[in-house]
Length: 182
Image 1 (cartoon, rainbow, N blue to C red):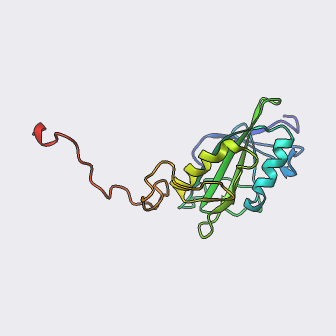
Image 2 (cartoon, rainbow, N blue to C red):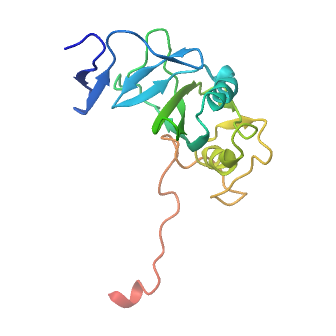
Image 3 (spheres, rainbow, N blue to C red):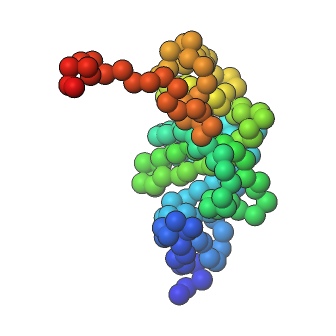
């Protein structure tokens, strides 16, 4: 195998992951890690907006996804580069470069006691609804967002349904005509 060819490894769930060997690539001043064939950056949450703005200047013109993951239980299954501390939440942003015909994934660690990241709205206005969904479902706020209100759940809803500690099944389901089927 050549020094710059990726080596195959497997993750805790048995999926194949690709690790980079040889020279390290950089984008927006951050080292790139390869995972499952995709380039991944791990910016600090305070620098997320600036990194995305630099990436836009470098040709990553479309924000495809802004979502989040709740790692309530740290089971050691996720791989992070050395020096990056895992947090309960992770905001994931996927950018596309049409010129390179490639995707770039950004993984930002967000602590449970301060679930706030900078909004990408000024750089990618299309991220507005995606950030609202993350806020609604996970309770992660986006600093500088123009209208950070619920988008999927009713305004008076208590809690964030995609958090792993959200109680499920508090309201029993009532089916129409359930008594007629007896």
